Length: 262
Image (cartoon, rainbow, N blue to C red; front, side, top):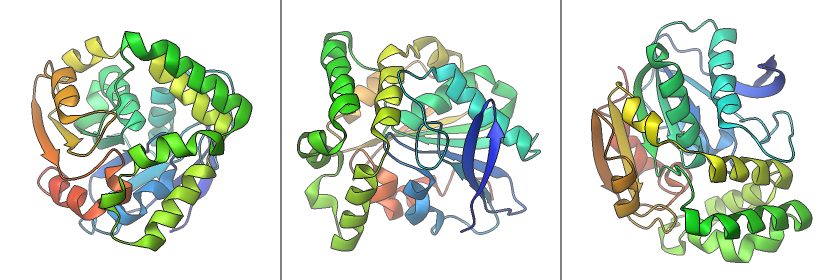
């Protein structure tokens, strides 16, 4: 896989473009992830798709940030990358966890550019009663780094029983620990501030919403309830956790088979 960099929407962005001749699929990764979060899934996708993935602002090897991010800015980063690649036709947008929030805002702001929407274990906001705790966690990560919260976060983010390969577990954990803590905190603050209720209700594109049966952050019940207002929603529960693309790429690939363009 070759990657490249471009300045889009006022920030440097690292991306990968498979260059296939089919309809484009845009992949938006999770919190503490990068375009490499999709490695296992991309290998299982139908050949011929044009698969585009990137490090969101503040993550991976894209431009670093601190403080707070704005969800509109992140949605426009995606649109600007498509512009750079001269992709005018509607695309399938797949967002994982926090990436699903960005995908939702993109679909709401750019309906003509979204052929279909896939929300994978979507993180679509923080309940009001948990916002103070979440804000304190952001401050702690800013101050002390991700390793200081790893013991509390990682067992929930990556359920132990779902690992089939110890090497993949070690790789995923190391990648999580290697994420930029200021970028993580900034994106998390964006999620705390996000209000996507109107976006979800406004989207006309067909949407596939996938919840992980073992996801403690967005249980199937929570995900189902939060996305009920979507006009053309298909809801499914998969036997996975919060980071389906990382821990259960084969299960996710099978779920996507019927909705990805040929």
